[in-house]
Length: 275
Image (cartoon, rainbow, N blue to C red; front, top):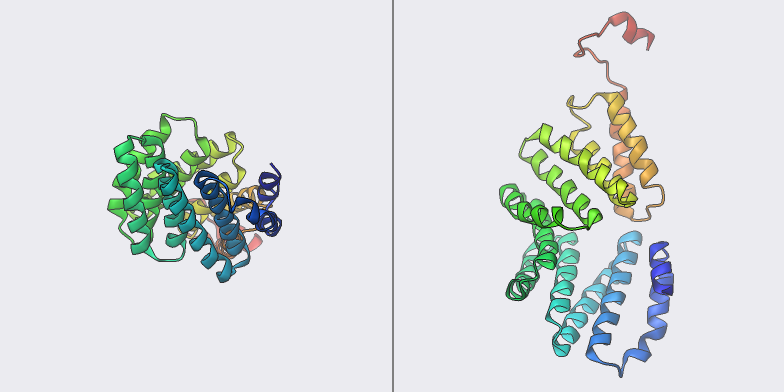
């Protein structure tokens, strides 16, 4: 319980300290508990490494995820091992190690397909779609994500559905299906906000700005309002990447607000000068 409190509050250093202090207790327990411990330690290291951009923590997280997979295999908990493989693949994707990420996703997919675990398999496929987007293989990513959304739409994991819809918005933007992309990103934000997943909602709005804010598909006033909403939803964000994205979006908004709207139907030179 204490770990959950520290992690949800973004106090990753405290979470890591608690886990490190309790490490000796897990030396003689079952493989199941040891797998869970290493997975939690990896998550804490990954969160701290991402928030503070510490490569040493990221490197240790890879080691801990690998240990978690090993102990899950020793315990015979294939499903848990597959989920951990997915966690490791996600971290490798964030590091740009796409081939390694695919390798771990392949392992997870084989296990989950045999177990007919469609729910966890959807999580694996969503990670796969992210890797494919990073590789600019947008058509493949779109096909992969279609199955994920079909599964999540039938479930009750609204935050995960919102994240998948946000990814779909990115894919469609890259495929030049702009109107559909805008609509699905708006829906992603609404789904997440209704579920109380404010971080996911903020990331959906932030993605809307990133993918469409620089174009005339969205008027400057709407881009500005979207930024205010994203900034409010992400006000407690500590992730360095998210903060950097917010700052870049702020610069984009300022450029849009500084435009002279000569392409608008009701444009007048007098009004523009007065403004």
